[in-house]
Amino acid sequence: MIIDTVENLSAYASLNPLFPKAIAYLQSTDLQALEPGKIVLEEGKLIVNVNQVPPKAKEAALLETHIEFIDIQLPLSGEETMGYTPAKELPETTYDADNDIAFYPGLASQYVTLKPGMFAIFLPTDGHAPGITPIGVKKIIVKVKV
Image 1 (cartoon, rainbow, N blue to C red):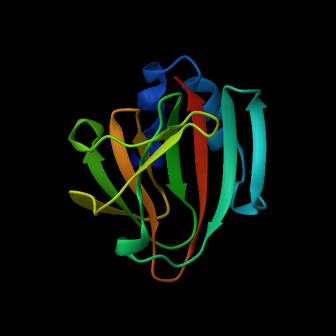
Image 2 (image 1 turned 135 degrees about the vertical axis):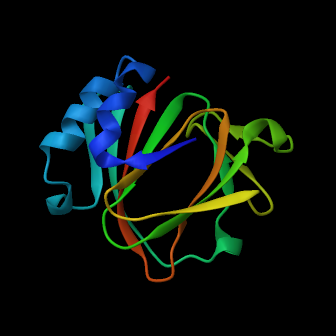
């Protein structure tokens, strides 16, 4: 898991060959003006999801992992708390290959709160429980093919 501010996003361009394109989009787009929905930058490889997340308590936020995609998550309105547990510490569970997701019971081992202007990168080795917010949050989730 990587947590940083958006002004430092370019420093992570070398993590994946698709990151430069994702970063260029994030830096050149008025993200606040985007309506909820999906924007395909490169079919099957680079997808931007604009979500309006309703209020969610820590206990309702399921830990999840992905195998095929890296998540870049940016809250746009309000604060969002995200749980983190290394995937190697999570129990075995069923993986949904069609949706590239596995869910895990229980609470995360750590939590971090992001504000607008910050981002988190979750690799396949990172269990994460996103969307914890008392009032809801608009956010961007960029799905980047591994």
